Image 1 (cartoon, one colour):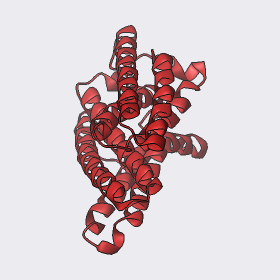
Image 2 (cartoon, rainbow, N blue to C red):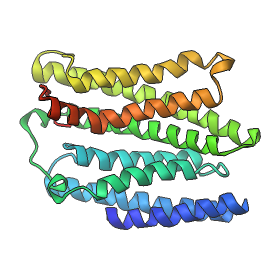
Image 3 (cartoon, rainbow, N blue to C red):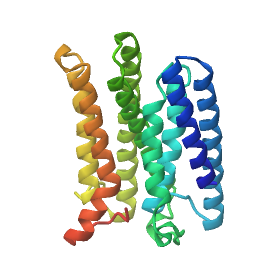
Image 4 (cartoon, rainbow, N blue to C red):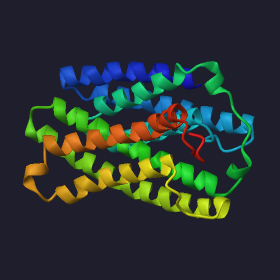
Amino acid sequence: MFTIGYGFLWVALIFYALERRTGRRWPRWAAVGLSAIAWGLWTVGLVGRGQASGHWPMSTRYEFGLAFVWALLGLHLLATADLPRAGGGGLLVTLALATWLLTRPAGERVAAPLLPVLRSVWFPLHTLSAALAYGLFGVAAGLGLTALAEREEGVQKPLRERMERAADWGFLWLTLSMLLGGIWARFAWGRPWGWDPKETWTLVVWLLYLLPLHLRPLSAWRGRRQIALVLLSFAGVLFLWLGVSWVVRVGRLESLHGF
């Protein structure tokens, strides 16, 4: 299902490019329809993986990545379906993440048994809120990329406004994810916060997205500078997902997080 959905996304990207070139409406709706089919296939794939493994399908870095793409694509459609020339950037971000996931070695894609510490009601609540936060941050990054590619202020302004809204909602969902993770950690390990590498970098990302909120009233930090901050913050999200575990492994650091 994931591979078929991935193929639909590439076709959708062609239609988004056609919309940008011709300025017509029908290529956008074709792209939206194809992307919606891809999202539906991705949903079926996640549900099937959960049923096959017998647990919530977000227990590994690969599985969380599948949920990340699922959330990003669905939220991208909600944010851009009615806005002309807005969908290309977000779909490029989605395809980049999906390409990385679908080219992982077979060993990384195998469903693993659920660890005892993950057998908690807090596990789905924490991971789902994190996936929604990451997805919204990806939507904001995609809208920022699209706004950078546009030269007309009349096109850029609604893109930036929706970028701000996506980043704001992502910040709220990340905050909720951190709170739920702290409650879970209190029950699992006896403390809500332990400066684990994953926890520490999550705090860094939270602060990165807090910065544009404080700088937004300043006219000098709107436009391209604002977009640059959003893209920098999303780079922090990607490092949180992919880079922290690599640093833990290479640096032989202690971490209670599997990914």
